[in-house]
Image 1 (tube, rainbow, N blue to C red):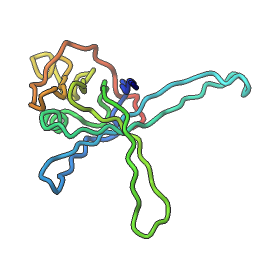
Image 2 (image 1 turned 135 degrees about the vertical axis):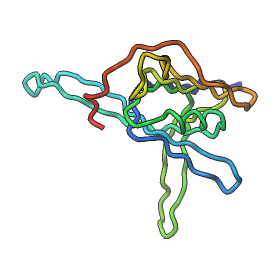
Image 3 (image 1 turned 180 degrees about the horizontal axis):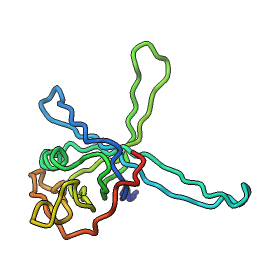
Image 4 (image 1 turned 90 degrees about the horizontal axis):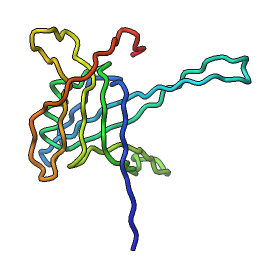
Length: 159
């Protein structure tokens, strides 16, 4: 008997607006690019602070989640994403070697949640809380909604 756990959680900023593509089967796929940052002190370089950004590809095929992402997933938004790791392998025409891409798949039971207010939100009810959508276990779309989140200043984001 074998078992395992394949679960990923990220909190980062969107590097671009969501990209939604239509599949030949008639379905849709949404692609997000999320940046996570960390910094450390490099003691070998005289105590210099080093900032490091890691980029992550997030993908979903869930219709209700894609609808929410089309409305709200804009560059610079602070987002929490849950999913599982999946590696795709393909070969381009005319090439002898395979290419690989590891992505975070948001599948039924996982979610994407916005942790900030969208630009232009004000105090009179326009998007006052965090926006959440789950990929439901039964494949049906769920309405977005969630608990209020703390607003963060996005003016210092390099992208």
